[in-house]
Length: 135
Image (cartoon, rainbow, N blue to C red; front, side):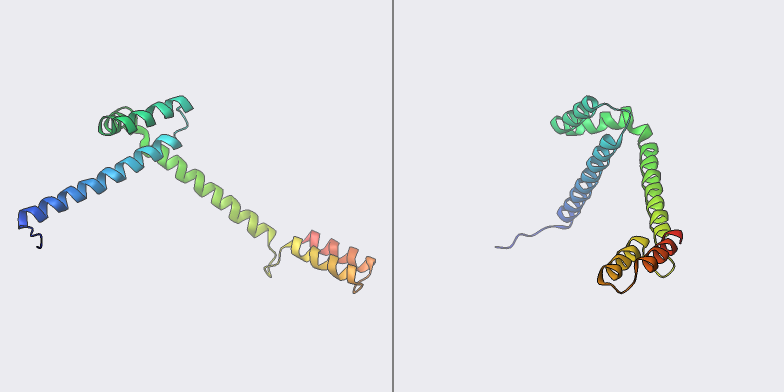
């Protein structure tokens, strides 16, 4: 026997599904804001998390009422910190990489290997090492 849905039942099923997705998204946003918030102590975060888990609807709505006004500022600060960390990482990698893509540490390892195998002398090693280190 096949289940049949009328037009109204499909509409209500889609509406319930839509609000369920919004509810999940709202929970994710509230928990991410809760744990990224620097102005709450660990106990405060634990209390809010427990309140949201025990009474989800009331907990989320109270969180939005009392702390929702600053959610965008905390999200912006987090995004800016992440962007600054990424830019710092890129600058560090760009500074550590020479124009041909080789890093000085790799060049020094190659020179050490050449010296160990006897391909270059100690004087040549020191000269090439100074060149690599100076850039």
